[in-house]
Length: 265
Length: 265
DNA sequence: TGTTTGAAACTGTCCGACAAACGGACTGTT
DNA sequence: AACAGTCCGTTTGTCGGACAGTTTCAAACA
Image (cartoon, rainbow over all chains, first blue to last red; front, side, top):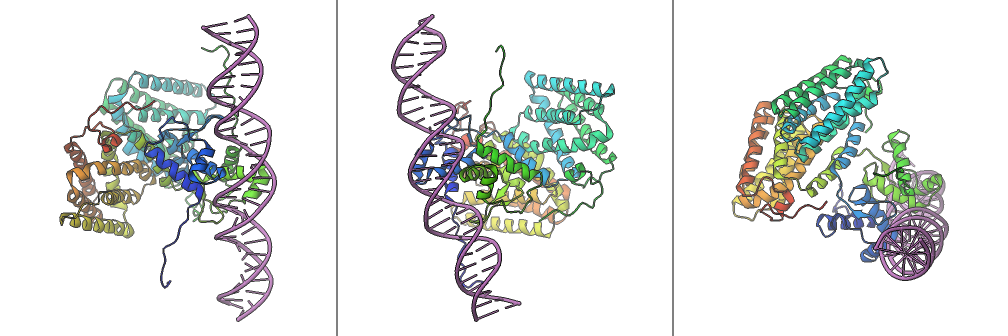
């Protein structure tokens, strides 16, 4: 209940101003991708700040993916590859304790749409990538069937890779980006489901059916099989007797009842 | 076709090692969210490096969202809010010259699904937010109708906010994250369409219909209206005589023909 | 008990310095 | 002409020290 009420005076630290200024130059195109960043001393002179301050600003640019460093060379302006950035977002999501239901619902929306489009856009190169992925998964399934202990981490990685390839060949970069958190979350989800239910072959079969539809250029078939695949995904999770509304990281830590302690904050 | 092929020898700079070390501590839970980061000098001692080096490492943490600074206070460990991180990815996407067709296709998949879910999950608070957004947009439309010059930037921001609120109240954080690049891209797209076609009122009406369905708890209606709204979006773009396959940033720069120079790299 | 005050701790910024690595030019050898 | 060796200016990575302005925290005070 202050009398006058000045607006909060905000003084961004100098290193952040440096960051903002350089970012603006890049976004405006005055610094182009591939160009080397001006030398730190030169920047310090231009901005009228110390070199240390410039360096701290450059660290921000570095982590945001706008400049790339290779060895001790001059850092260069770079185009952050969108999937790289999104994956750190997904890491944050995992920390935020997303539930399986949320993951599954999003998958049901995105995956069939992606599979459908992929059937119309995939080329030889994409088919080759998928084919290699299938071969690797088939080998792993055969190994497991023969009694060897399952490499859950490796299998989940292959599963994720399959869906990621699909997103990248569907001819729509916005959809690929939107889809990224889903693939990332497949990993914890897969690690929960697979060791308990051993549905390795079932996953592989679904992927193969989808692949066949892609190779045949059959969008409707690809969508249908992906839909089934995702339905399987939910059913498998339900069979683990875990609640759909348990957070994935709680589940992966083995807290099977819904009484996990409240999230801080 | 190299004979032996040594693996690349990599020497990470010390500030990155500092970053890695602190990140590990956070992800392992030994540094907990909300805790203040140890003092720079103390960290410098522990790591055996100079304070400047520690500071550069902290800048990386800062930009990755793991550390939050408020004024001159001690920085605190923070949980990166997923939407914050995703937005930098979208910025990268814009640079990557996504086409309107990609944006629109993704919108057609995500927006109706989100609207449908929002109708089942929205609460009083969410309805209030949407209502305030609608009021602001209505005022702006009335202002424009009365002959005032349109504040395109402000209007587009309101438009984006509407869709963002919807995503945040749909009860699915994965979908909200997946949706984020779409809202971000609404901004350049809206700035292209609106000044040329002046479809302000049409946008407002669509939002109002959707809002009414949400308030009435009508998922099917919300989906249907959102679908129409997105269809309008495409039609409006087509009316600008821009190709659907022109990249958004080329279009916003006024390069209307498809002969924009090839993208570097 | 609640407020004020003052010292300690800490961050933001600057300065100066040096080793290591890189880029390029120049040179001598084969 | 191709190549290895050498030198040198530039630039980054790291260090030590310094100081002003804030925040924190507890003692002193009302």
